[in-house]
Length: 296
Length: 290
Image (cartoon, rainbow over all chains, first blue to last red; front, side):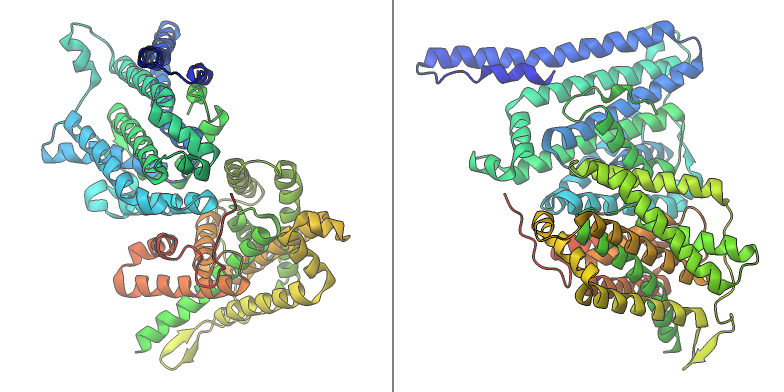
């Protein structure tokens, strides 16, 4: 998937018409791989559903797709830009807990999940600037510290989060979603389809991003900060954007996990979960979105 | 007043443990450029081995050196089996390798020892001493003395001995060191062995006060880490000062703010240091080569 957009940098173009044509070609290519990825994922999700014999498999399948989603975010950060984060479980768990907590105050689940995702994105935006000035080990440790702080708050504030025991997530069941269109599925199956669909969209967006101008500037930073800056790329901004995007992915995955499991514990925000996420990304090979096979 | 004194005493005790861990970090980082996330595991190995031996009836003065030697062996094994084969690996891989090693060691300890929380009696008994309204355990004095001794030993070893100067030469430029005839492989082995021994010693000394179990390593490593960051990566003096400061900050947080967030203070410190003064208190300014 990675090699397809490199061919467009042809010889210099001198007429406006050629420039227009080339632009058009580039744009079409940029849409192509994303759609392709979506279809590949759709087939995989469908295949899973064909061969799964019981609810248990659907449950594991759901976890696979949720992990895929979270890891896709890491791939954007680690694979595209080359930034190591050991704190992404923090964003994951913010997504999860917001989805779990807000329904207790009368907010409907989808809205709760959305606000969790926004909250994680906002936090990433705010802390991203100072944190992303660091690189290498320093960045890894700063994100680790951030993740630990989020985890500690969640496990200590028992009045809100149930503390170390975790809390149940009330609210939505994906079954009802399918009932509306007349399909009657078991809830494990329903969540499987929702998670698979979300993962497919997430992967398609990530692949599209890789080919887009902003994705290319990210990969330029991967090779060299200084070279990228000398090409006129706003490095701090691009890094911050990648950080926010990967936090959003993690938060969506967290929200989905909360809803699909109906139960959430601070463990999901622990240091080990951050490490797992990075490990899965590295196992899958950072520059590619193929980390999906890393099961939970 | 006596309350503050008490917090100071316990802060310095815990801080001395963090300082020892930070010194171990610094040693490995200086020699190999690797941040060893498995450093906390050395502490646990020291504590658990000593606890198991003492539990089996071995006297303390035999059990303690044996535990330190056990830690040392694990340190060398870590270098030979995990770090050396991946010397040219990118940063992410090195991070994951040392984290993986720490997970493995944790699992191994669970199998070799058990999941219980262990402690043994302090080296000079457990009767607290009274100092100006505060009480201090004799073991605290052992811990503080131990850290200072480790620091003094390292200063002497790295500056005055042939082997120590070999480590420093290897740290500053491996190829140049090899060219002037320093056995860089031996220097690396030595620095991992020393670092692990320091960690294990910290564990042996600390266990009567802080207790130990197979899974305390992560938190220990992270605290030692923030100490290293605070003091300035690569500076032994910084490691000592950073450790003591983190211990004091933690004790004050627990005493005056909330004991729930005692552990959080170390991470707040990490973030503040990284934002405001990434080179730490005693570290040289970092300039990165393009």
